Image (cartoon, rainbow, N blue to C red; front, side, top):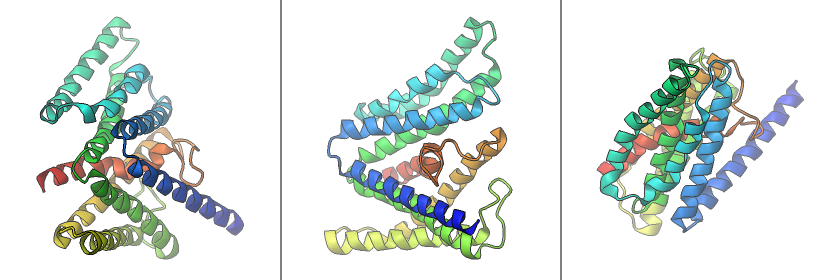
Length: 274
């Protein structure tokens, strides 16, 4: 059993390293269109995993779910002044289309099917869309790294500390997570964010406030952990362990990006304000 655990930990570390490299490669790509297409592909893979999961309890409207992922690749090219309006009006537009399908199918598509589908669209393509908006901002790639290090830094520290000294379970939603791990994850995310900020300020003459970084690091880490619990609650509801086995030791795409999904809209809001 111990050997199996060590093997799973090695798989988790290797998969995590591959994901980290993939993110860095994305950040180094200068062509914005290519980056947005990559985000759209990630959205398609994640929504596919979500649809497969909820298919155990409903019949989701798959075609509109996949179609909504196209927005991820196009939103960054729309005039900035219209983006908020497009996001706002996309919700009633989606409801209109889905209710039309309910009528067209003589209620073979049910309200439950529609509700689960709408939630998935808001949860995955719409949230990922904020990543493309951050990437399009001035110094967007630098800002994006803050999301990456807080989300994955929290996950790594929470897992490492929780596995070794975690004694107090946090929630039945995710029984393996401990209070000690969650606290360590937040502290670790803040420390890594401060180190990254120091490199930017000292090495590249930025003037980023450490107070803002520490406050944002705490907020992003806590939001990311809620995102992790949110993804886990869906898995518990449909009785699955992972969304897929795409990434050995980590599960599926959605298992890997659940934290950063929740952080993205709040990070965009903060970056827009400051």
